[in-house]
Image (tube, rainbow, N blue to C red; front, side, top):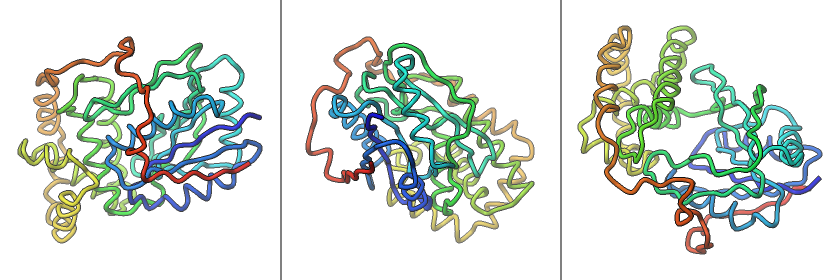
Length: 303
């Protein structure tokens, strides 16, 4: 079987050790992986797709794994590799079992080496699907656990990121499908907190609520880097007064109509008035390797 390349993006996830352990247990599939550490989500995706482009002649395919994903058996990479090497599919997609929402969400992707990846320009939607050839393979299976071992700060920033993708400010395009998916995830987190508890779930709801109703200038500070120092300061503040915020926000979320009204207000606002990049514009593809972007790359080989 031909070798594949795994790209992992890590920034403080509590699942990271488990993620690597699940990779190192994989069988019957030669692979190498690199780790992008402590970058903003925007920059991490730039590095990820540039690496996939740079090494497209060295591997039969690529797999994008977030550090909060733990492969749920020892043959996931073998399965992905076999699908990509049939010659029938340019991309394959499997589900992850999201701990906070208890939903199966499509999030684990494998790409054949002839996929064309595009330069990351959108400040929010920067994990767009590349151009691919032949067919798209949809697996109905769950390939990984998601955020099973997450910490409270990880859940806190997860709530911010979900609400960013719901209201989609600072985006070149507004996609209704994204709004519906992300709202479904947050709504389920709320109900699973009521059903099962776990304070990590309430931290996700607190941050999502805060982002939705925060002044626009504060939204911009959070969006600059939702893993950064400003968000960490907010987290400390919310943790200190968690019970106060929890009681207040849970009462509001009992009847989500005010939340939906606020979401509608932002989603109906215009997208950024900027150059819209498309998959037909060759100028947006990643064509050159910039060594300045790769200071945090670690490559390991597993045969």
